[in-house]
Structure formats: C-alpha cells, structure tokens
Length: 299
Ligand code: MN
Image (cartoon, rainbow, N blue to C red; front, side, top):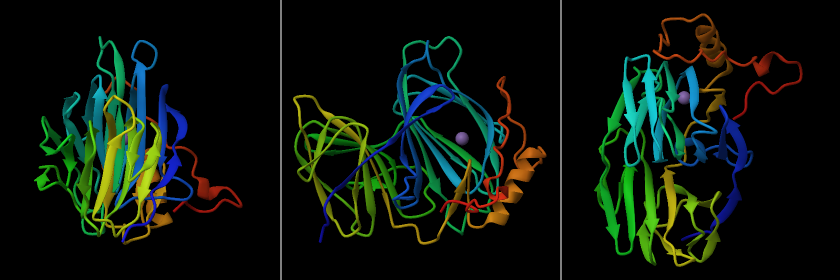
C-alpha cells in the first residue's frame, strides 16, 4: 500500500536579501495536496539579512507563516497588524484579493528563520472574501518520542483551530526517537527536513531536502539519524483536484484572471486596498505571456 519515499532537493534563491530554499513549486511537482509554495528562509543574522517585503498582492491562496527563530510583523489591506513569534501561526486568506507587507521589526537582533507557505484555495472559496487569522498557540500531538505541533488539519487525533478550505494537514514535527506516525491514506505528503537528517521509513532525508510520499500510506516511521533530535515539516492533503495556474503572487485557473489581477494591482484598484508600511509597494513583473514564444503560464 505504500510506494517508495522520493527525495528531492530544494532550489536555493533569495527573497529581499534573505537566503531561501524553495521546495515547491518544482518542475516535476507543482503541488502536494493544496500546498503550492514552500519557502524555507534563513537561518540568517538579521544584522545582515532581514525580511523586508513591501506591500504586494495575492489572489486565490492562503499564506501560512511559521517562524522558527526571530519575529516578523505582518500588515495587510484588511487593517491587520500582527507580530508573529516562534510557535505562532499567521494564516491569511486572499480569496478575490488582498495585499500585505512582512518585515523584521525595528530593533530586532539575532537570527531569522522560518517557513513561508501557500495553500491553493478550492473553487468554492477562491473568489470569496479575504481574511486574516492569528493563532498565538497551537495544539501538540505527542506520539512517544515524536511531538507534532499541528499547524492545520489533524495529527494523531489532535486538530488545529486554523482555517482549512480543503482536506489537508501541516505540522512541525520534532523527532527525538523512533515512532510511527499515522497518515490519512487519501492524502499525498511532503516532508521538509529542517534539522536532521531524519530517517523516513528507512530513507535518510537530509536538511534542505524534501521527501515525497504518494497517496495510499496510512503511516510512516520516523527516526533521528544522529544523537540530536530531527525536525521536519509535514505537509499533505488530497491531491488538488483542479489544475491551477501560478504566476508571481497569484493562484488562479486561467490566463485572463492573471491579466486582470496584474492590471488591478498596477492600477492600485480597490480590489487589493492599501497596506500600512514604510516599505515601497512592489510592482508586478512584466507579464510573461506577452513575450513571443513564451508559454502563457506555468501550471
Ligand atoms: Mn505575500
């Protein structure tokens, strides 16, 4: 009932001066369940590289921010202002349109380290209203020497209060010894190793790499491979049933929707609204689909 664990490498890049490993989207895998974007940023010394992402728009997705070290301030066009610290979750729903800015608070010192994740919204909610929620603490599932902080969905019968629009799971899992973790067999899963390596069903997944597990598994064996505990992010969900298109900060279904969203942002339309930030508004990149010979959009 279970295929092999596939191990892939993330792509090293940079966002606003911050080093990032991007595990999704990849050329050979665009989504895992509804998860469509997985950036692991830092660890970086904020004296050298802080988070300075000015106002920019989103449509058709949730942003999920999970900080491992340091602090980030979020401002959005709904009027939310929220400081996020390790152990806390920010979940913003873009729906038909929202804008936000994220930055390292003034006077911050030490390391900045965390995950910026996107979840594609299903047809039922993607044209709906924008929303923002902050969870100051999240429940933990303790499975012997494995402790899972449940960001979204459910692990070991413990459910997160965070919003989900389709069947999915996200958890921060500390692996201090060997344990079997139950999985929903209707889900596919990805495991992003943050500290490790971690052995996943006997396959060693190093830090920065991503293990993929297809649907049909009802459990996995996790085990640290050194004397130190391993740590990974477990992401999963029912394989996304609708083909999506992604461009810049937008998740949609058609090229026409992308053209409209880009136009609306460039025209500073009410669709996105203003964001309180000292940082400059980020301009949309040139539309790829206007260049001759370019594929309209990646899928
Ligand atoms: Mn964003």
